[in-house]
Length: 257
Image 1: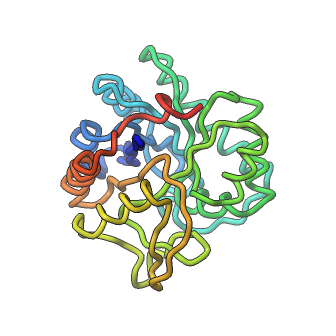
Image 2 (image 1 turned 90 degrees about the vertical axis):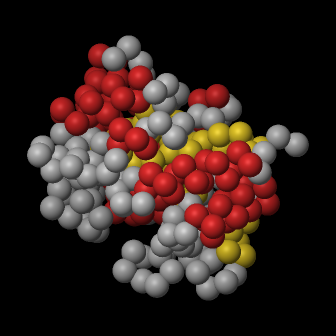
């Protein structure tokens, strides 16, 4: 049996003169990128530069819409209506899509960011607003969402293209959500621990939670965050570890139907 998975990273998160991450290097080792669209991070020049780098490295591009919260990097919870969720997502996807077209390509997927991602995964009203907007904008746009979440299940029920995402560097709760960043067990920083975890996710569809329980999971794409100093070595080690285990790393568009 052949195993394959997409490897993605959140990049393009600099803003003006403020630099974040190692985008120029990270983009060489992943198969898909999620580019910030100006709400939680990024700006038009950064978006243009990030799309250009992705095209030059033959990496697939996804929009990474966040809450309108530059100061909080989109990680603070905001009370927004379904109408706002729909509009925020469409506004940012449309902006990045313009840069993709300018560089002779198109978007592969859309993945929400931070607090927007976490809330919309299981808030049915917000999730449905996001799904409605995807149907209106482009039914072929892959929706990258948390594995096992409401939005993943409902998206599949609607016949949309859904990529279930797992995290190499984050801890899991028993309900399949991610451990809050402020709590113990939120991060997996050692590749020696992360690689066996993601291999288990792909080959066995299982992951061990922060409390030591084993839960079901589906891994179409693995996220490695690009906003920490060790990100480059982490993503290089993850990719090498996967390939050593006979797992082919390739973009979603090549296998997700």
